[in-house]
Image (cartoon, rainbow, N blue to C red):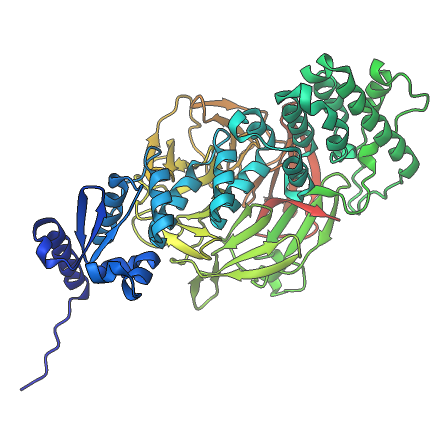
Amino acid sequence: MDLFEYSEPVEHASLVLNGLNNQRKTSPKLCDFAISIGKKKYPCHRSVLCLFSSFFKATIEGDFKENDEHLANIQDVPCDAIESILEYLYTGKICLDHSCVESLLSVATRLGFAKVIELCIDYIRQQIDQTNCLEILKLAKQENYNALEVSARQYLLNHLCLVFEYEPAETSIELREVEELLQDAEAHQQGEEEVVLSILTWLKKDLKYRKAYAKDLLRYVQWKRLPAPFLLKVLLRHPLLEADVDVKNHVLDHVRKSYDDGKRNSIKLKPPHNGNVMVTLTAAEASVQSNQSLENQTSSSPSYRNHRPQKVPHQALLLVGGLSLGEAERGDTSQPNVMCYHPVERFWKRCAAWPERGLRGFSVSKFNNDVIVSGGCSTTVNKHVILRRAWIYEVAIAQWRQLPDMVKPRAFHSGCQVNSQFYAVGGATGSILCVEFYDPHKSGWTWLKKNVPRMMYNFTTSGCNSKLILIGSGQSSSVFLQCYNPAIDQWTVVRSPNVPRHLSAPVSATLADESKIFVSGDNTKKLYAFDPNKNSWSRAADMNNLHSNGNLVLLGNELFHTGGHWEEDGYWDEMESYDIAQNTWNPRGAFPHLWLYHGCAAIFINE
């Protein structure tokens, strides 16, 4: 007779697991083990327990009385936690919320349920905010939850001032811990304004005891990076400085010293090759000289913004170039594909080359202080290839490293960071808008099971308030928003008043305090601002030029818009910056090379 092999592994596995689950609920005599908590017994199967729990595996396989008695007595464990864990073992389903996750995590840790621990930690990581960050960090350190500790610390470094403002009395942060944070270069990536305000906020929480540490903490501020308007209008008018003379004098000592050092060390910088004039702060200097708090200075105040000492972290714009004009027209691959723009000095510097060349449709996004480049496509006469590859540019060592391949090949998609994960949205073939995310702690990509509710063909993504925000349009040109909350794994379609009528190939950038998302599009001079807290739109000043195939990136207190446009005499690739406070645009000059497609991200570097 002919050999016939019948196989339905998924259905069979589900049938077996459902059968075992029914046994423990309706036929306990068929179970070979039980967990006892007080007067309650929970029948189960030792093979299932050993599969998921290192504790029960060691207990059952070892020469212990539990193995002989087929029973494990567990003390001081809530029954509902054990019930939830057993339900997960047999069904793969578990319900997590703020009321039970801590109890579940504690029990899972004690009994060695590794997968439950992982699920609880993933849930808590999505819940980190200014009100619980310190408590979560303390828990992670005590229990050695490394992934959770990294996420909580990352949030703390990115929101120092906000977290210090909500510092709970029972989880106060000590001087040693504050100094450790201020020594971390990542604490300075949000700007020195954030650093000095964080110190003042921490001091103010317990001023009577903590003001003795003001002098030591203020030395961690890189004073030369503080702009004069901030010193005059914000810092010197800070309530703490007005209330406490000692702290104010410490601040003024550092300000005077930074100005004196700037005068001794100031150097004359050469103008960039494109002829742009170096921007100085003569008006701000005059204001500083006239300030009453600095009248004791007999010498004029030099422009410390024109001098940056060696090895001081500063913000820069990393540009990753794809298909260049030379490649498209002549097959010329000689020009670099990664450049770094230093906004203070206004010069470009060549960086380590991205291993890919001649691509279009890839996504470039900031990830912590590194840059992730994902997907893209290559089109030739004979074929069109869409890539699954992803790369990360590690700023600290200035090198590229290949990440695991994405689940789906993607091109002309959008990517951004939300909490400690990187999301890639769209760009894959099919009739649905699919999403996957990269988690560095798991070193791999995970498919988001819940697809975006409404199809979008024209959109941009932003991470804001721990949520993934999609802004764009579908088959019609009407702009709308879709919001994904990772904490509860839920999508929401958002309707807003006064939305822009149409945005072609939109780009976006979120402010550091996450109070606004700025949005623009291809071949338009319009710039819009969306307030996620009020669900409202407003119009900002128009740009000076059109920009196509570009990016919108936040550098300090300015938005940089890149991209090119065609004119009668050729293709022009340039950028301009938007001063958010002044609501004005300023030219920033042409690119050092011409790219038909590129992406940009903000980074902090030590050079």
